[in-house]
Image (cartoon, rainbow, N blue to C red):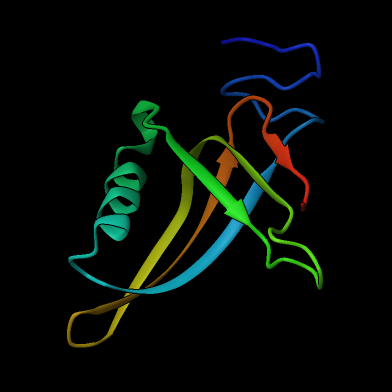
Length: 104
């Protein structure tokens, strides 16, 4: 358990928290899906993933805003609608303070 100078704490939902909801359609053997799935089923043991989330770049910029940081995978649901493709929804709940990325 730690608290940083900005008020974020690891493992505790505080007034300073962050999360990213995510929905995706991926192949069931895709490495990204498998990493998220295994982090989700092991989430109760504190398994963290490190994510980078970027928004599309605005006109005239080379990159968009975003966040990156350590998080746990929460509220994971999945559905196989066709052969080999899995649709899943999850929420990445931040652990500690995120790094904010401003567009350039």
